[in-house]
Length: 166
Image (tube, rainbow, N blue to C red):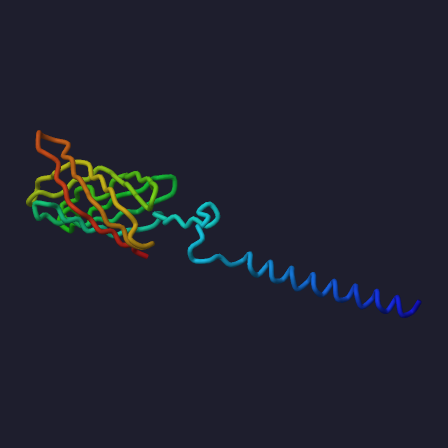
């Protein structure tokens, strides 16, 4: 009888060891994927975060250049600030409310009213609309359109580059 019990104990020990080895192999294989296997986007999508401060450089098609700062806040709100020393010297408004949305495929849109200085005392009031794409977590590039509020003038189009500022 003692031989049978020793045999049973050895059999149980080997069975338990084999089960542990199989389980360890299955867990290790489940944790890896081949490079050609599809990624489950619902598990680890990493959408860029727009919230924060952005320095924006605009180049209009007519050669005009403008610099702004965009402060993106939560819930699609933000502010656009014109970085023009002449505007500050003359005491004109340099900051306006803005709104933003994140789209699919790293697309981003933000817009708001602005007043660009014309010469020493004139102002060109209108709306800026930025349509861009995240190139990296701290860089957005795209197209911009300035639609004047006064007069029958056409919109001005151009490109922009925004870089995250800390």
